[in-house]
Each structure stands twice: as structure tokens, then as C-alpha cells.
Amino acid sequence: MVTRKQLQPVVRREERGLSRSGRIAVVLGLFAVVVFLAVFAAMAFVATEPPTVSFIKGHKAGSAVHLVAQTDGAGGTGIHPTWVSYQVKTPQSGKWVHTTLWQLPTNTRIDVTIYQFDSGGPLRNQQWGRVTGTTGNAATLTGTTFTVLNSYKRPVGHTFSVAALGINVPLAGVKTTEKGFCQSGPCNPGTQLHHTVTFSFKTPKTPGNYRFQCFIPCGAGHYAGNGGPMQTLGFMGGFLEVQA
Image (tube, rainbow, N blue to C red; front, side, top):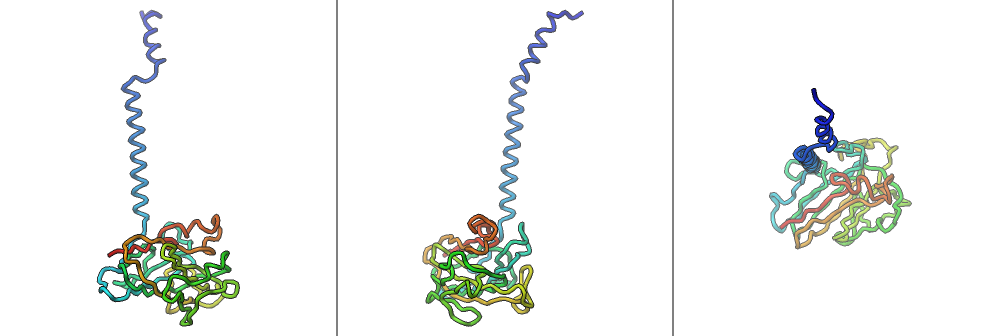
């Protein structure tokens, strides 16, 4: 027969809870979970990073690069298919790719053509209506040269702005009520309503990553117009990866 005195050590051990080896096992288990979650998050980030389109491969030194892109009211793909978005045409295959990571050679003239398919509105800061940092501080809108857009008279859909290089080009918006308005990208410049904006600039002699983004109004609905698609790679925020 087990006496009360004999039960007391068992009770005391139970009151102390887990043994040292048990506590170590719990700590190691929790550490393994944290490591797993960190690795999973890192892999998810890499998996969602947009691809890079290179304009360096096959480029002949001294010749200009022709960069063709489009801005769409809805990108149609990615983690936010309804967000405004860039698409860029690959120089090798001519396919539209949903990305804002563009590799460019150093010290090279870049001739840019942007097909602007999105609607527009007034700029909150009219300074973004002025063309800066391009050749002659000018651009063309459907063949007509301009240096500034008054967004109260001609709504602006987006801006192509590279602050570190002093580049800013307003992109005039189209009317959603007109025939051929594109609902989701990639859009077709041959058949759907758009404005064509062209300009040129020269890349720096020094390699580096130069961030570009769209400024207000395409951040409508986000704090200070600077959230959502404008700060997200693959949509309206990206990098000119200038390499030797």
C-alpha cells in the first residue's frame, strides 16, 4: 500500500512542471518554428519580386537604346491585378512583361516611348506637370513637343519621375468614356485608346540603381498619394539598373 508520505515527492515533481530537458526541447521547437517562418517569408519575397528586363544584352556601344513601355489602369497580373501598372516590351522577343526593373547601359542615350492607356485627373502639385531632365527638357505628346502640361486643362494619368536624375515627364490621361478604352493590361497600342509620349535622356557614367515612380494622382486612395502601387515594384515603382 502506497502511503501519503511516498506520494509527496511525486506531487512535488509535478508541481515543478517540465524537467530541464523538457524546457530545452520546447525552446528548440519554438526556435525551429521562428527559423521556418523567416525562411518562408524570404522565399515568398523572392518569388514575388518581378523579373528584370535587360537592355544591355546585345547593345552596341555608342548606339541609343529604345525603351518601350506602357502604363495601364489595371495591370491584370501579379498580386494586385487591379492596380495601375507598367508593362515593358523586351528588346529581344518584343513581348510585354509586367515589371519595373529595367537594366540600362551607362553613358547611353535612352529613347523612351510610353503608351499611356490610363485615365487622368488634376495633379495635386502642378510642378509635376513640367518636363525636366530629358533632352531639351521636353517631350512629345502624339508628335507635338511640350515642356509642361496644365493638368486642369489636360488631365494627367501618371508621371515618369526619376528623382536622382532630375527626370520628370507627365503622361496625359485618356477618357474612359471614349471608344477603345483599355480595361486591363497589357493593352494593344494598335487597337486601343492611348496617348503616345516620347522623350530621351542619358544614363549616368557611374553604375547604380536609380529609383523611378509615378507621383500623384495615381496614388489616389493611399496616404499622401504615396502608397500602394507607387511604392511597389512591378507596378508604378521601380529601378533603372544602370550597369557598365
